[in-house]
Each structure stands twice: as C-alpha cells, then as structure tokens.
Length: 239
Length: 239
Image (cartoon, rainbow over all chains, first blue to last red; front, side, top):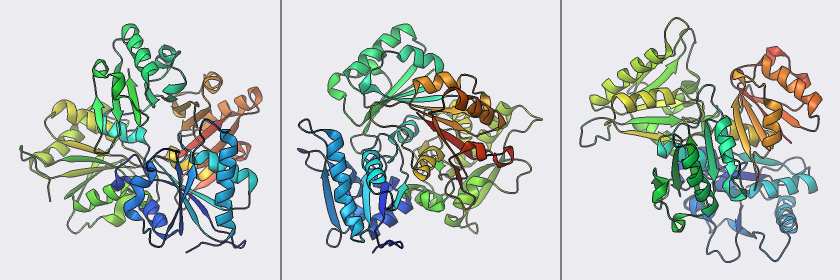
C-alpha cells in the first residue's frame, strides 16, 4: 500500500515506538507499521538485532513486509557519509512509490537516529513527503514509573546527554527544577556523587530499560555500580 | 472491573491521552480507559467540557462508565485545598474497590494537573496503588509536526513555562541548543521579539493545538498577533 502524492512517490514515516513495552505504541504508529510495505531500522554492525525492531515486531507481518536494515556509523567511516547513504537508500524506495516506515525507539525527535536520516532526506530530496509520528519518550516513561513529576506550573526542565559532560551540573541544578541526564555512564555517576556532597537535598532516581522485563529503578544511587550502567538509562534529579 | 490488590482497594491510573488526535493514545491507555468503571477529569468551572475528555471520549462507554468531574482551583479558593478535596474524592472510589482513570492531556508528568492529585494521594493514602501511563507530550508532537528535532547527540534541551517569565531567555538560548516555551502569551512574544534583535540567527516556530483540526504552525513569528495566542500553544527555538 502506498499513499502516493501527485509525484507518485511514497511517503517516509518516522515512527516512534516508545521505550520498550509494545503496548506503549500509539494507535497511529500501529496502523502505519501494519500498512507500509517497507520497514526501515538502523542497526549497529555487530548487534544481533535492532532494539526498535524488537519493540515493533509483533505488529509486523514479515511475510509481506520488507525490513530494510541500515548500518549505523561505525568507527571506520565518517558518520555524515553513512547517514547520507542511508537517506539515499530510503529515497530509492520512496521514488519507486513505496511507503517506508523508519522505526525509532522512544520519540523520533529526541536523541534519535531518525533525525539524521530526516535531515539528509530534507536536504537531498526536499520534494519527498515525510510524516513524523511522535512516540513515548523514555523520559516520560521513567518519570511515570518512578513517580516523579518532571515539571508543574512555573517549573523548568532541562534534558542533557550525560555522555558529553556534566561539568556544570551544579549550575544546571541551580537554574532548573528538574534535570534529566540521558544515557548514564561512569562520569555521570562521579558527577552525581560530587553533587551529593554539594547539594545533598537534591533527589535523584536512576531508571534503566524502562517498561521492559529488564527494567530497574534505583532511588539510592550509591547502590549503583558501573556494571549497572548502560545506554538505555537515565537519571532524573529533582530539587 | 477492578484490579484489586490484597487491600481490596481499586487502583488509580494517571492516563496520558496525548495532545489532541485520539489516534495518538497508546494501546495501553485505550485498554485502561475501556476497562475502568470510573473516569476522572479535571474541569474548569465555566468550561463546557474537559479537553482531555474530548480527546478520550470515543474510547469510553458512558452507559456503563461513570465520569467524575473534579473542579479546577478557581480564584476564590486556595488551590492546595481544592486538590486535597479532589484526592479525597478519588480515594473514596478506590477504597470502595473501584479502579479510577484520571485522564490528562499530553503526558501526566509534564505540566499536568494529574501531578497535584498524585502527590496528594501519595501523601494522604500511601497504601493506595497508583499506576501512571505516559502519554505523547505536545512538545514531541509539535517537534514532529514542525519537522524540528528537539535534540541530537550532545545537544541540550530546556523546557520552560513561558507564562512565568522569559527574562533570562537570552542566557537560556546561550546554554541550550533547543528551548521550548510552553503556553505562549503576549510576554513571550515580546521576549521573542527582543531576542530576534539580539540573536537573529535563532529560529523559532510556533505551534498551537497540535494534531487537532485547529492546528496552526507558524514559522515567522512576526505574523502572530496576540489574538492567535492561547493555552495549548508552544514555541520551539533552535540555534
């Protein structure tokens, strides 16, 4: 099936599939995943399977739908070139009149590989139709699971990627009521440990693999060891 | 139907119903809305209907489900007292073994009235079971519609409630790659106008009533008049 425009081209959908629980897909995401002929997933070279595909797989019929696996950038090649090639591969399908759904864990506009593909498609093929279906972000899912409101009334929320440094965490904490650190690593834990000495009244909760069977919620960060850390994790800090 | 625990009490669900399009409810939200005996909505005194209820109504069967309308705080009464009374009303239903779904537009943990009810229930009745179902936030839906990624890789995102002042907007813009101003008002427009003189390379997009028939996306903020402004609106500013 295709929603061909006047151009005869297919449509690219960026579909957020949420943080892990397949029941957190939206009705719209399910409808689109069930009707497009081509499902596109980004995949790391040595990974057994795409995490986004694992979340969405029960809604697909692989006897009639093609799964297009696009490589993630790896150390050996320039990332921008890899994403340009991915965009070209998708564009070929669209130009043949096929709709393509690129599936993204969480939301496609928040720390998602979809945004690289999207920006390249927009630049190289501005006439190709694109529709983005928002998804449940792990930020909202973690707040829900931990029972920690992210913001109310006049409060301010900051969302930071922990992996690129938390040197100014103390300042951020002073200016924002809630701070979310994405993709927790050893440096994050060290920064939080320092912060505990500086601002002991701050409360932090660590959540990983939210809404999956491997979910873990830790309210006392001193109980965390570096072995607990992984990509699909975040810390919510509130005053 | 009730998911009674050992206590015999019902469960309170905080259910995010997304920004407006009923197709943006999650499968889980739909399942819970269709099974609970009591639907709880906050409602302003002189409003014709609850916005969250409008989004969810097609999934309800009002011949067998009760809609419990709880008043919003109004000018005449102290807000904290109003929310305590709302929490007590809900607790009575839970103690009678009925499950209650409190519906929240967007996500229940981000600028939602649910957090007031939740915090009161937690304090006054800590034994009552509560489960929060995340929803699509208008922030993600607006980014999807406007085609503006909120954050990639090492970028930082700040979400601010515009109504409580944007005096330090220039500083926030210097420290964050993307800034979302919620609930745009005249002061926001003035601040953005000033910012345009200071940082003309910044790009802003205004989105209101995203994913509804009244949706409006405005890329040139100079085209906005105060008459266009309303509660369900936001501005995304990127560098």
